[in-house]
Image (cartoon, rainbow, N blue to C red):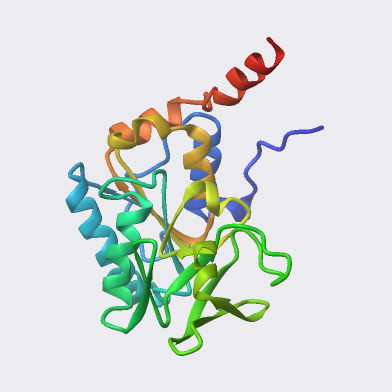
Length: 246
């Protein structure tokens, strides 16, 4: 197997590709580049989690759509290392829902309010519906009389009973792990030391390589450096294998 480390000429035009190669080889991404109109990789330095949240909301709703002509729901995906915390997936989804899809009637399930036009993700395989873990769709309608929700996926419309809504979650923000195998026009990623246990090189690399046209990191250079320098993944599977063989 030949590992291709060379970055070809066409790739050099993309800061995303250049920085992905740098991260993968343990080098910090180039973030002190001039603010050129065609730039596709940005780092916004901010250490306060509440300010990072505010910046992410502003980027998703206003700054990226205005500057790059991208749609907040269809083109921009917020990724995060964690589920909990100010910039974890749960809180980001609640905040992004209020920013991007406010005030509509909905149905509450499991502490989450689902609304018409919400961006949602299937979180387990459903072979009967032919919808699978990681599929992303939009809520088209909510029928309170028949207790059904219609969700539109790339493959078509799928009906869910209210009792089946535990199979979907809001997807304005998703974990980096859940994003594996997918690509998005634009990616926003918080990088903070409060995510310390999850700051790993492969996580940052995965997040950066999800973005086709634009990647924006928001956080601290310290957290970014910790992640890039940490090429050791979590060892729980190693421990499990050891215990099973003991």
